[in-house]
Image 1 (cartoon, rainbow, N blue to C red):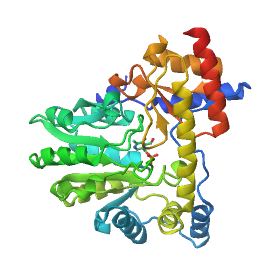
Image 2 (image 1 turned 135 degrees about the vertical axis):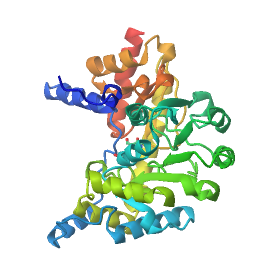
Image 3 (image 1 turned 45 degrees about the horizontal axis):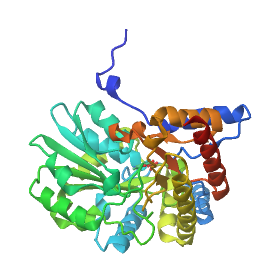
Image 4 (image 1 turned 90 degrees about the horizontal axis):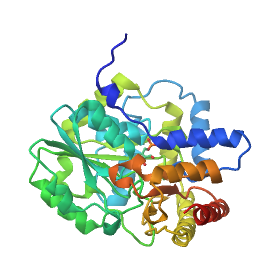
Length: 391
Ligand code: PLP
């Protein structure tokens, strides 16, 4: 019998893809499915970005590029970050990757091994834990609490550090909760981490440009005290509705950049060339489409939160970032995963059970409001009917 390395017995998945597959299967049988499960904007990539890719193909950009990405794109990323944060970034520290997820894989691979402890948010993006487990490192969940508006608590996070902590993963604005960690809390965390120069930090800021009601996203890059061990994860998928293009980037510290470049060479050679030109057009072109998308998300956010709070046994905080609501469903009498499954099978509304995002996800479901206002209203109506009949 074939024997793969132990890590493959521990590697996990992202259940959002299984829900999407089931929803698609049900739709194929003629069922009217409203998908509030998958975490991708329901908007098209703006036309000028698509045109830039078409032009790149016509112009003959068909070959390999440098492994870390074409220089104009890395310069474009650096300029964009400086515009948003005021921090000057060296384009040679930027690595363009096939989707933000790849940066997670790289960072966790660099620090994960048996005996190492890696802190990650729970509930949080499921791939963090999966990858930590894969490497044999010990996953240490950092509780993300509803009563704390789904922000990180600096005190609780710092309390989990041990001499074996190698990497800490942060995510704000957050999936699946929509929580945005306030600057004061990040400052406290940074002050604590300043005393531990042996710990690397992976800051997943993929939703950094998706905040509401004046909530301000604070980039970890702004703090010089930790910059020499900070890996900044970001990308195009969410901001520019480009999930299928597989375009992400990271800014790596000096100590890790060559390792990151070598991983790129070993694994994917380079991100596909026309997509890189599209990524550049996204950064340098008009940003109106991003603003329009956010205005639309904001409208739906209010619709979702009000609608959820009107359902029997459901209560929802107002998310301040990303495009997810994470309502507490514990008073419905249902466990989260059976509820998500019953909602899909019986009402055609796809959501994700909170436990798919961690131990503390029990009692919650995630709804992505990347669907039309009309469909969201229909989904809430079906959920209301279902919960009134089956509570
Ligand atoms: N980080 C978080 C928190 C996410 O929710 C996602 C996607 O859902 C990603 C990273 C990955 O993004 P990409 O599609 O660019 O790999």
